[in-house]
Image (cartoon, rainbow, N blue to C red):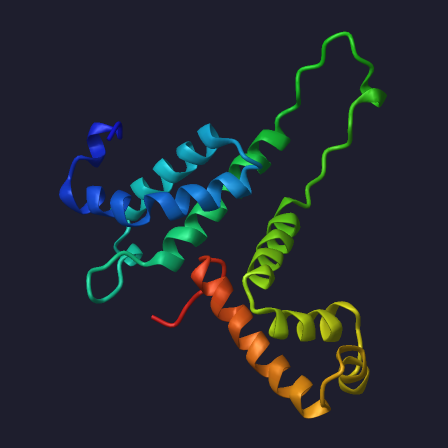
Length: 177
């Protein structure tokens, strides 16, 4: 399996088997495709899970939202830490270097919401996009989509509920456990 010896214990092996692929894929997206950094963050996440009893639900199972939240925070902390250190400059002029953007969390949030929206059925996603992103009224959305105003209202309700569930599933929002 190639994991450190500290993870040889059965519960942690089960943690890797149950959540490793999902957490790794999530972190690869967060790190912009950097698989090595994603693996490092995943390993740190699982070590923290092993050390913190709150990482498990009352039934003894690992808490997926806890794992994803901690993984996201570790990834953000690593980026912030790297940004806090001055980068080494060679013969380049300082004014030629790009400005450091400290809006990483907002970027992650936007990415997660977009991915959760993309996972919704088109009928729900379309209504949410019109109402919230195109700032249309119920009547304007109904006219733009060619559906009844009551349908806009119900799809907005169910779309927001499905969006929240998708974000909880991705480990971005706390779930009810």
